[in-house]
Length: 77
Image (cartoon, rainbow, N blue to C red; front, top):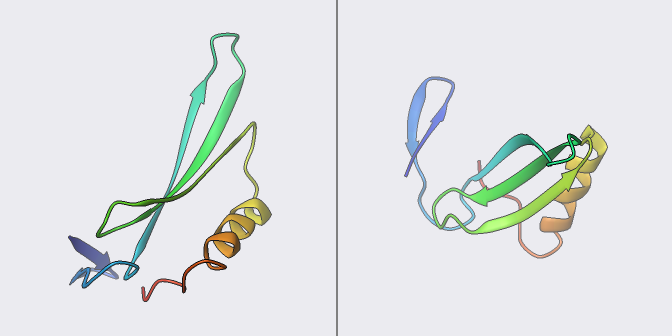
């Protein structure tokens, strides 16, 4: 799995080397919108967290990341 940092290619060397964060947005059948944050281990593709809500603020993202890091160390990159 190749990673990019400031224009240079890097290779994930093992589990927990790098995490990927993504936000997705969608709409329910009744028209209400929601967003979801997903956090994946880049190499293993393990889903470390999913957080969904009508809105996601920066504080909520920090809370999700801190919760993950209670069970495993922060990624190397």
